[in-house]
Length: 284
Image 1: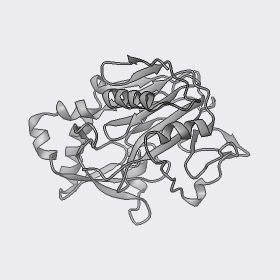
Image 2: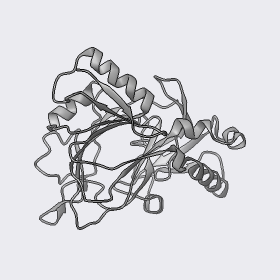
Image 3: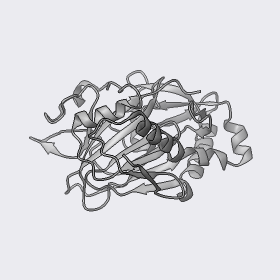
Image 4: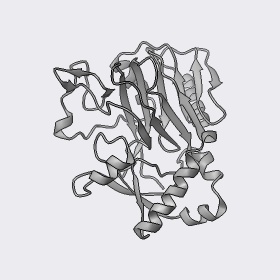
């Protein structure tokens, strides 16, 4: 296969063409894709026709598939999932009044997948099956650049510190996540505010509006003020690539150095994407 790598924006992201992900890939092709991923943080493959097994096989080139830890009320999923232990539907579709997937409706604040776990997700692989006519875009944010451009005074405040990340299942905004969260019932973990990518050795900010609730060893008022300063800095347009989905898109992103968010979309239109995640290591 002859790969072509085309940048998607000045901030981050690249499209790779010339590869059919239904096929077994050679070590050389895999290495080229991984290199592009490390360079561009988010990789897009257009016009793919992938079964669940195809998607899983491709993800496994990058590591071990992360098993899902779902609450009992979230387990009523469509029969089209063959491997519910690792595969998740992101959808607003309802059958017999019940959702077939997770994270169904509306806007979703910036976050990094599973940052509330001791060993957060490494890479996320999201495949588009049904897409609304407008909205439901995914915004990706370059956390290397966000850290490197952080004002020196703010950088001095966060280097070496940790922040509490926690998540209430299916929350999509900070307000909903933070107000309703009971730490005795829901996953949470202290993560470094600045983490080092284990493969590129670059530093990236590792906080986000949806799931980062507080800074360790700082009172609530100071913590909120510090986090709001960071959020205002990182959510600038210069760090963001907006992906407008097409059916057949597979997007792979690196949770160790990016954030992602979702724009609102009409609840009158169907949206269905399929997700698998590769597990990562403890952040440092």
